[in-house]
Length: 155
Ligand code: SME
Image 1 (cartoon, rainbow, N blue to C red):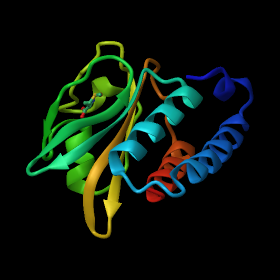
Image 2 (cartoon, protein in one colour):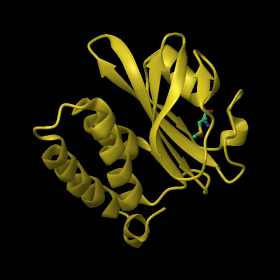
Image 3 (cartoon, rainbow, N blue to C red):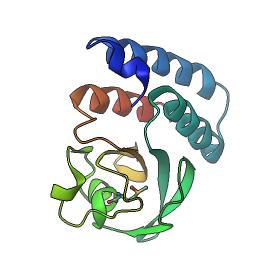
């Protein structure tokens, strides 16, 4: 994770507070969903510095890879499959402390050790998921959940 997040225990809150405000500014006046996903993925990635940050969009009965930053990833994930498909199905954020302990986890990269997946909701419908992968176990917690849910609610 980013040095910014490692420096101080309270640093994560400040980091997200700044990120949130940047996303508000960035999304202001732009309605194109792909453009916004691309910029939000880049902004999160270059702030938190995880292994991978990106979106999967709901297309029929599958998630299809959308804008991302990081290594190559799987193109399609089925409903209820992996962490992403499970977050889509449950319409809930999933924090995975150790990917080896999540049954059905889809390993797009062998370097991924923990993960958070946040559904992007339009009304009662999941239209996409935000997925962030870390090379370290236990990277994500309720602070990440809370802020990332606030960020995707802007989209
Ligand atoms: N690990 C995810 C797959 C997507 S990649 O991590 C980018 C999952 O289990 O759904």
